[in-house]
Length: 214
Image (tube, rainbow, N blue to C red; front, side, top):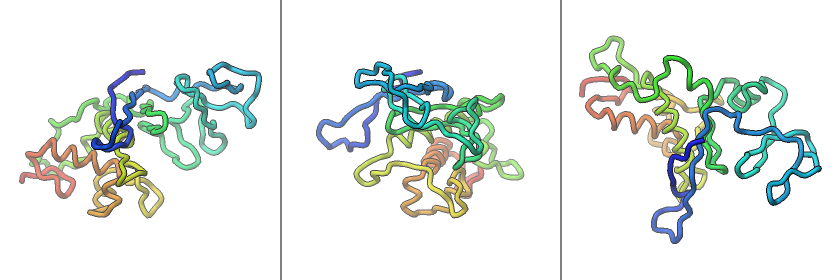
């Protein structure tokens, strides 16, 4: 676990006494402890079992959540693995209620860069270099962090992963550009990542999702 800083919990800066919270980071989902018995208000284990079997427990706040079962759920992968709603391995998971970002094993795979591989951006490459090839741990972290800090009185639901018309998520340039200038584009996490990348590598034209000379 690493403390990376403080941020407002959705309040705008001109509101009185905004709340600030610490963000917890974990390298995999094994930090969720499996417990069979409930805890009391002081966090002490009781002799009362959970009604529907063991649950995952946050060792810091003792908040519990159900352990997925059936379908494609793999206990060895925990919450980072596939489940009934998402059949793919997750790169990371954000829990806004607990203010936690959990990185998953898939994001630590060999060859996956930690920082943005900006040296790869080449406006002369044929075929054109796509912005999606700048995927990195930095991209994943930025994406997840927008989920934590994006709530406001204008968007109380916060920044989310918008679903496309096929039931999948709007990840990457093609899906994000499909949202256009709609309100959905302002609450979709990857739209902010792409905006940040294009602004960071401002010397190139990314308007069509590829690296071009302005």
